[in-house]
Image (tube, rainbow, N blue to C red; front, side, top):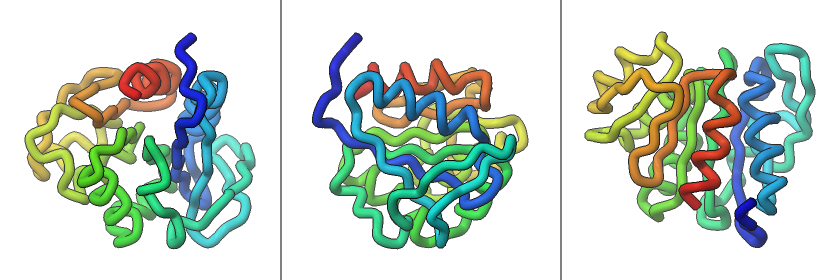
Length: 172
């Protein structure tokens, strides 16, 4: 397996109702590849998944500095809609794109990228409920399980979590 020792990823999860597999599977794959993963959320020290898993939160998104990371990932689940219009989350996505970082989003989280304006003219996928939003923001919706367009990797949902993580690693 490719060693990514020294690389750092920031995974942003909802404080409540993040999708368990979409967080834990990519996190595990990244860590096995040597990536140091930092978990961020909003106003909590522990987040709770849709399937009741608990995740320790390392930092609040308000103090997350995207320039200190190689990879930015927005995890899905119904709770991630909290970030759809959150200025801090949108600015993290915009700054990561400006700095040419690898950006990932899975399930409904690609809407965060679309709302940040960084999917304009990009191929992207998401959970089917987000298709209209992505298209309205200029994305070319693929409906694939995982779509890679340059340094932006988007995925459809929990079943795509493993492939999503592998595509991120291949893009680093």
